[in-house]
Length: 218
Image 1 (tube, helix red, strand yellow):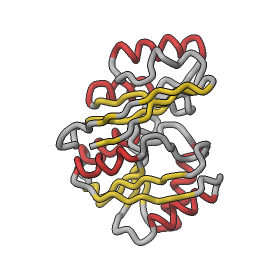
Image 2: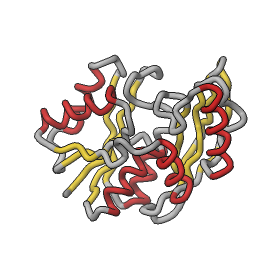
Image 3: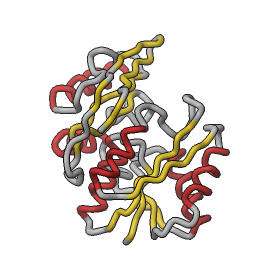
């Protein structure tokens, strides 16, 4: 199939793209929805400038869809941004979020295309283990009790997974972060021609929310 991918540059959507390529599909586009509202229910807002560079590394077209980020209206903005794209389906990195999957399915139904969600139903521990073994993905946002300087800015590897497991055992967080406990950014994946570079790194904590941002990607 000829597919496009909805991605914020995080580990789940990038792993979903990799699995689509592994399965023999063609992925032509990376699509990023950019919300003005930093509290968007559906879309991430941190470090989205990285996705254009990821698309270049992957030899894919990049499409950016702006939205105010208002609940439900942002889904229609996404739909209109995808309309007319020459694709048979949309890749998403949803693991267990029915909120995300139902809305993407509704958009795809309206546009007459398929949903490709290869991570759906996977064990969260299996997702992070595959990310650790195949990618350079780093945690760039933390928003849960027990997560902070212990994981922020660090690569997801075996050691960090053990930290997540320990926090999950105490705080019952979703180990893959699908409950919003953390967000990630991928710097390298098998389908990138070379890793991303970044500078201007800044770390900020506002209450229990920690964020790593970068000034430039190339």
